[in-house]
Image (tube, rainbow, N blue to C red; front, side, top):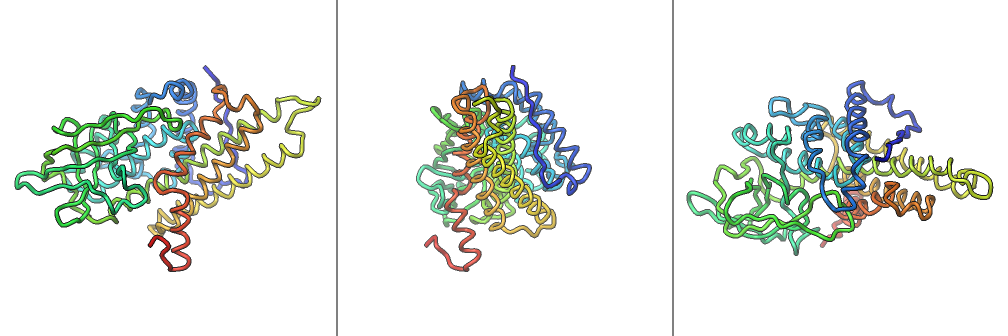
Length: 392
């Protein structure tokens, strides 16, 4: 098995901005990734399979709902701790981070924020421990960037709701025990419903032949006259704003996670540049290779500062959706460019599974699109600074 030699770059001494708890949480996640993810991830990416045996480990390092209160099974950590965990997991693999991010921000978060007390007690402890795995049903075959156009709907049948429709590109769908599904009622108002595996008419076919996020399970959610108990409706909030708040939390985690992928590519390229000899000297001694590495560490450092500040604002409940969009867009774009430059530095070796770079690059091609595409986040920032809506 390959040895994980990763050393995290900290060019601006950002560790001095972290509390001892932050560093303990991060280091525990880092060591777990080195021990449990790095040795197996290339094999699972090659065979396009999610390593389900790591679910218990993810729960143990607090990756499922780290900011969820202890009374509901969470770790009760702050937003910076959540971000650091996502950074370390994505340093291992974006698909594994997606699994944790969906569980935390798109399943546990809405149940915690919008659910009834009975729903919190029933689902959150089992989700935090990994006994239950969840998924989030918003995107549809014909509605991605415009989720408000969804056609999935439910009708009040007196004793239950009758749910019909379909969702697409759903992480964790093939093995999820529950799905938080967003659908329109008979008045066209969007609500969240908790759909459980085993409900008649509910199926989760897996999506195959992916070139990206290959170590993550992706599928569809199909609802064919599914009878959903009325107590499974999330009562705390309705309207499109409810799922968008969930996406804020997930996008915040992605902003941190992308730094992890970038750091792994940078660290790999740096070590390779010091070891690979061409023209009688290490390739790191050549100006163009130093230019690549200097630009990589500069962009990583800028992203680290941006995201740390965003975490502080999140802790104070002052971060805006537009600020989160900026960080998600900037950091994923940064990571993708670093992956491409790092791949070039490794030459032909960069496309092999002996190194993680090509896997990161392929994964980031999905991350730059999901939970708000690069262009959509650009327009969110544009609308925020101009006050003018370019979407219509």
